[in-house]
Image (cartoon, rainbow over all chains, first blue to last red; front, side):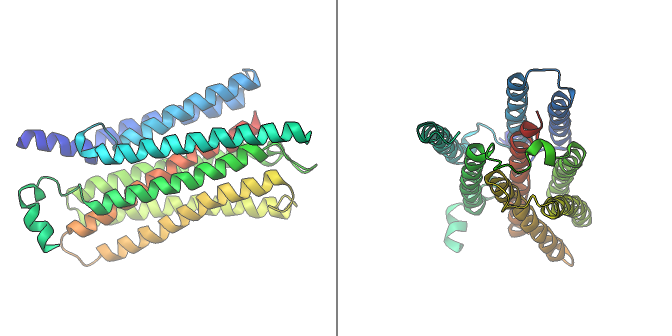
Length: 110
Length: 201
């Protein structure tokens, strides 16, 4: 129990190595998205897709290594609230884009 | 509180980091996430409404953006090292890391304010076009959060001076500021990707 506990403590507060790993991953992902945009080697839509993927991965890296999110039962409520918020934001973000694009088309404002 | 202690006596030692204050703060962060989500939705709708004014490609400089991003990213790991020191009870070390985080955050806010002032001087203020209104609202809301974080960091550095041990209450404050600071870094990832880099493609 006590070893279990200390292992848990380490994962939930983070250690020097987990912060350093998270930091290195974050730097690599950030530099990659800057390089892709500055290189102009891909098509505009390809570039946007690439930096979107890199941003999504980096958000997950930050959530795991810096905000210490994990799937332990102790974090159940944090994760539930997080998932609810994610779903909520996704619905109104996509809904807003959909409605406003549709309105603009019908109003011929673009 | 007294009742709380008796009820959780068996678990108190093991689960001191699982206090309702930290969970409550997490819920606040999620509502903050909704604010940023709606501001991003506004920006997504208005990002090409230039009204004949300057576009993002003309306004944004990649070197300034890279420097701002670097400052925030480094401030994340310095805060992390501060938290590790706090768990070891090394108060002086916590104050040093927090001070470093403060300076990096201050540098970020300084660069952002300078960028905004430059844009406004060029006539590209928030009143120029819908794109710029959305840009200033979104980015300055993030900047305001960082500024509040700076006040919070200074407050905790002052509160830590003169104490001999880090109390559980203080540990909670540090944990919540940690969540807040790292959360702002996540928002910045979305800002530099979708607001700046996407405009420079």
